[in-house]
Length: 96
Image (cartoon, rainbow, N blue to C red; front, side, top):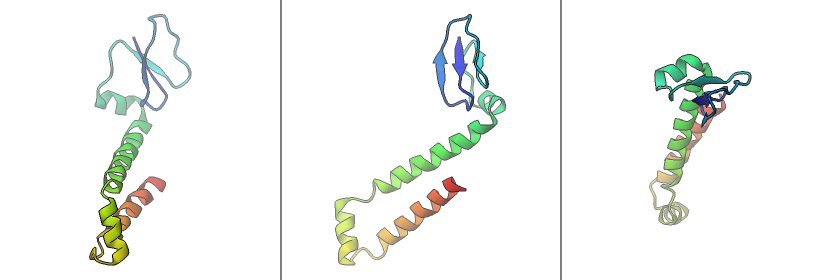
């Protein structure tokens, strides 16, 4: 048997006689995406937040030492500023 946390993001195996806590649900098998979204309204919001964070991490990984040197020297053609602008826009989506 499986137990989902109140936001649908945490899944763990539990004994068959487990009594769910407030907000938790149990299922005989793991739920698919549609069932998670139906059972947990906050799941879609949390998934969107994780997707945005993954994109931010991907963009930040592009800030290599070479790119930083070019930005400090002023030879990057505004690449770093554009990247920072994109990251800021994504962070603003999370905060709203």
